[in-house]
Image 1 (cartoon, rainbow, N blue to C red):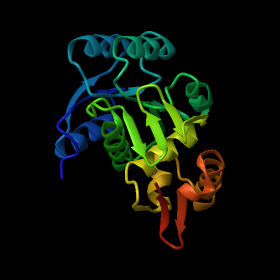
Image 2: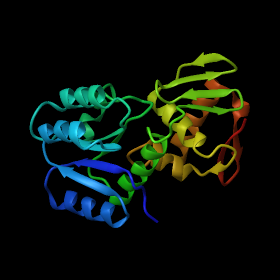
Image 3: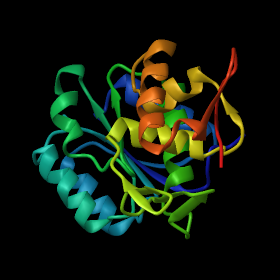
Image 4: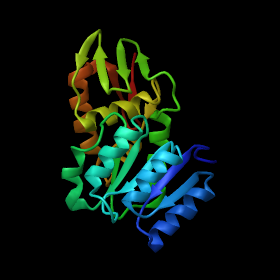
Length: 221
């Protein structure tokens, strides 16, 4: 089944791996434009109107912190999936918008990138109403604001991503392996998922996340 009819800007170095990613995404029905340097990214953002950008932080050209800042300025509603080597991921986190952006550690599997594209486009600007409600839980995806019972809640980027994964299927069981794939860009244990579920429960209310033993978690109204 095709992932999306929206346009994806694929900013990766010209390697055999990136060519494989390009072929695989196109075979799944994704409209993709490849670029191979930071200047090309900025030009494409201004002229091609992408729905999502996959951006390698080690592309030649301008410093990628500057490229990310320019992308956020030129296209504030366009989600970015930043591809980074493991040693640069900590510094990268401060440059990303927790409500909209994502990151992926190299090397990565093509199917993992496809899954993250599905998630980002599902949460991206194609949804005109940026305010999501589930009972007394309210999330403004444009600004990343979360409130419960009318009171603001401060979430870390990981907690926010976890909440958005649950909110994508409210009232349905979401298995831990899917949460791990969508929230973390590297293999994550069920114990790590459980730890962050407990963090999220403390902030939005334990009764709002129900555990279904052996199956996963349900976001309750």
